[in-house]
Length: 186
Image 1 (cartoon, helix red, strand yellow):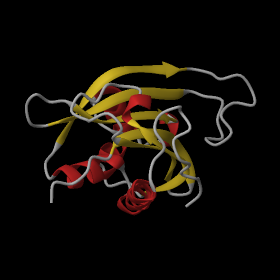
Image 2 (cartoon, helix red, strand yellow):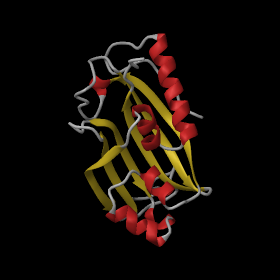
Image 3 (cartoon, helix red, strand yellow):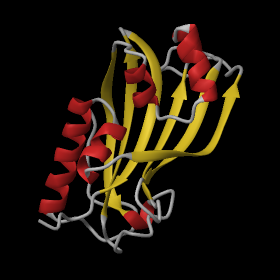
Image 4 (cartoon, helix red, strand yellow):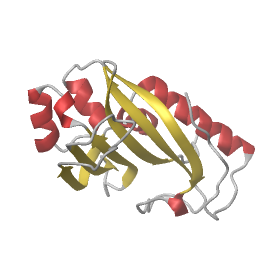
């Protein structure tokens, strides 16, 4: 795994050694479980439901394009929140994906544009051979999050992880996930 997990550099409170260690463990689990959706469901002990914030297709990107994805387009952009399945259905994670749709089988490409589903869940549902490479990670607190996690206490640790998703050996997508890591009750 590549990437670092620096202490909060967003002006928020510095994370202690225990929090930093917990976040490093979270990133390791993310790498080994494949995707954030299953990991968040496992941590919660119940399903999460995706909520579409926005999506769009970008037909072309000026050269040199997106180096990690080895493309100048087209790419498909999707921004989701993963919401708790229990009322009041608050967001428990944020998921962005920038996908090269032409590298997917036709039926999966159609599903990508029609279904509101995190990329990891979509790839698993279609039984595709994919892998995840952690590129960069950062630890901060929920105050730095891109969405409001109303259930989280101020200072709750937040992990942001950037990953490269490969389909076989071909770069398919770059994802960014933000997940608050609340203290366990047990």
